[in-house]
Length: 101
Image (cartoon, rainbow, N blue to C red; front, side):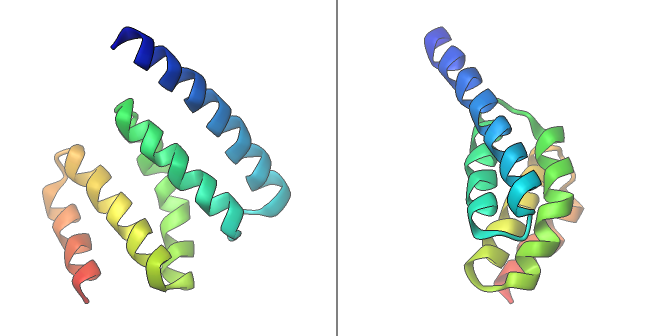
């Protein structure tokens, strides 16, 4: 498992750099940037970087809601899951209900 964590840390660094560059060059409201973010989000969750997830999702979720469809669900689900992992259950439940609508 130690080798796996080392690989995850390398991948986290790569994705953070890529996301930062795409965010700068393409903006957040961009298909490619959002796709990279969700790969980075998955890595952060594996590494239990909940604060990083939450901070980024505060900016990402409004864009996902505006775009609608699958991105809306993906963004809200990511935020709800992050809040749940942070033991912020009441806030998470509101978002889980939003996904049902």
